[in-house]
Length: 195
Image 1 (tube, one colour):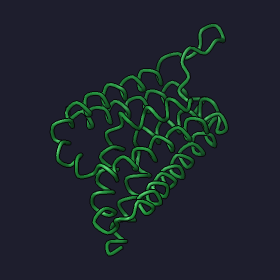
Image 2 (tube, one colour):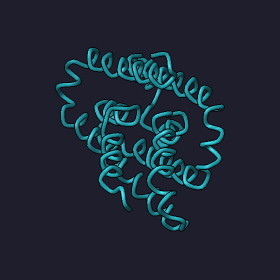
Image 3 (cartoon, helix red, strand yellow):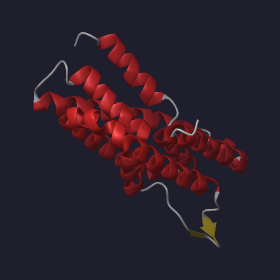
Image 4 (tube, one colour):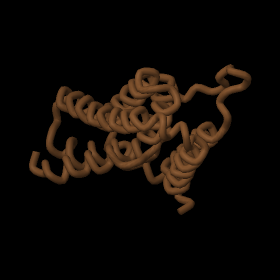
């Protein structure tokens, strides 16, 4: 690959910066602990891997039609992130019974298909760095797995952070949840094009 340094830089900057996946991993680890957050993280990994595969095989089609569907993706992604922000600040227990679980495999997978940051990342990384340099389907699968795995490492870092500072975060749970929810609202506003 000719553009290895820009490729690696782009991958790590986009993957490790705050976004819906990382924020939800940290919140879930704080709320449920690291082990109970693994389902969510495996869901994100699976959804992201599928998204990368779809992107690699349909990149030309998406580039042609993305301007037409991008506004709808932005609105759907923004609304879903607002929903996640609401869940973060909403009381999740009612007399000891949990009302909403955000650490499920299904939530992790679903988030990928409405997360415009992830979708645009997949289209950009495949269209800019992979498709122009490779033609093999096995290479597409390899890079899809590699990039999803790097994302999984990022999720783990954020989850470890949430788990490690669990006691401190629990002590200040309401302000922490509010800040995390506001970060998701900010992400939703950026993604939807409002700001």
